[in-house]
Length: 113
Length: 116
Image 1 (cartoon, rainbow over the protein chains, first blue to last red):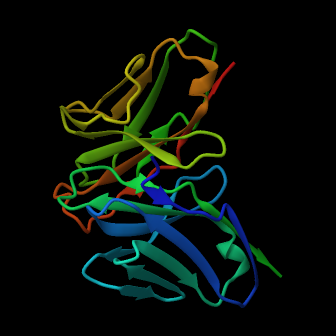
Image 2: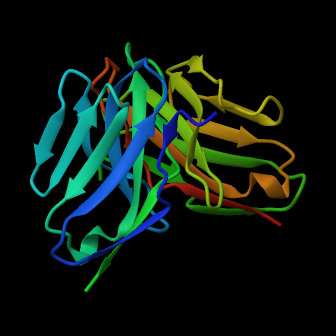
């Protein structure tokens, strides 16, 4: 039973355009959501997070949107740059914060020149 | 480098041998997490530890796998009698003492285990 789902294994976007990565979750107890970026042969790097009390969080070119009623979040990258090509993981954790994160399977973002 | 340190980065073991993976958390972090990434899969939670204490091991296989985080020294993930299916990337992460909702966990570079 996959509690965090990233339904697009890969996404190809032209450089300079907007990249939108999607993530759905099923566990109503999740209240903190994160995005990690991962290059091959490296560990995941924290990108941006959002708490369930917000519906949007922005950091430079990265914005995360949370729709609690739909149990859906998305990561927007604009403008997309070649260095953004990586695998992006959506992760979630429940209230209380004592547990590990539950990750999606990742979306491989490819930025084309 | 004050990040999460994992070693070895790459480990090759024959079937039946033991694998030991080490993780030193970031300075000031007392919570350690181990995740595994199998080929073509996402990151799977294995275990969450504090010093001398296993908090959550719900993701650990019931046999052959164990983890510890002693009072002194790194956290160790131990895999006994390795099989080919154990070949994966093992990532350690750490977080600050007060792991309240809103704290982020930070990952190491990973240890790649290959069982031949």
